[in-house]
Amino acid sequence: NAGVMQNPRHLVRRRGQEARLRCSPMKGHSHVYWYRQLPEEGLKFMVYLQKENIIDESGMPKERFSAEFPKEGPSILRIQQVVRGDSAAYFCASSPALLASTDTQYFGPGTRLTVL
Amino acid sequence: QKEVEQDPGPLSVPEGAIVSLNCTYSNSAFQYFMWYRQYSRKGPELLMYTYSSGNKEDGRFTAQVDKSSKYISLFIRDSQPSDSATYLCATAKAGGTSYGKLTFGQGTILTVHP
Image (cartoon, rainbow over all chains, first blue to last red; front, side, top):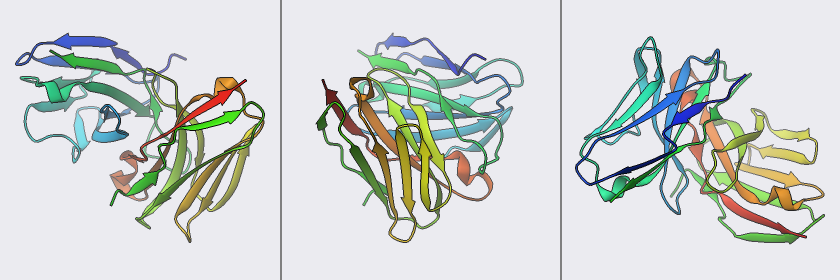
């Protein structure tokens, strides 16, 4: 059973370009979460999605950031007009369902975004 | 004040030592508690998960939760050099979609030297 997959693992963009980060959840998981880890800081929640629905985006910056989890295909975190402050490791996690008493989130290897 | 506080360390111990890692949290709505291990430039790996006060043991690892004092701990017995990593505590609230949002501590950097 493959784990959470993220690609690319490393992404370099120049200021003003767009960054697209992809996440394929574990088999059988229908919930996806995105977190950001800035240098010297802990993981910060960004957004929680189910198929075709955004459940909680309270951690997403109001501008330039968007996320989707279509019916088919991976979840996408999109950052428009990147700035140097967007440089960070972006982690995706997945869980099978909202059964809090029996399971939790499993993380992918992350995408390291560098903005030049 | 951060919702979850964790001493970032770094913590350095000799091989075989018992390691104690701790977090405190401020919001009594947190009902679920996790410990993740993160090796350098890798994703967090789930170590322990609990939703009640008390102890939970898994091999060399013991997670302890004290909801009355809002204090969570991870103990590592017979520590090994391969345990060298950053350890992250995480919490979640109960109810509805709240569980989808994990709140992490800053992480403690642990080095176990031979």
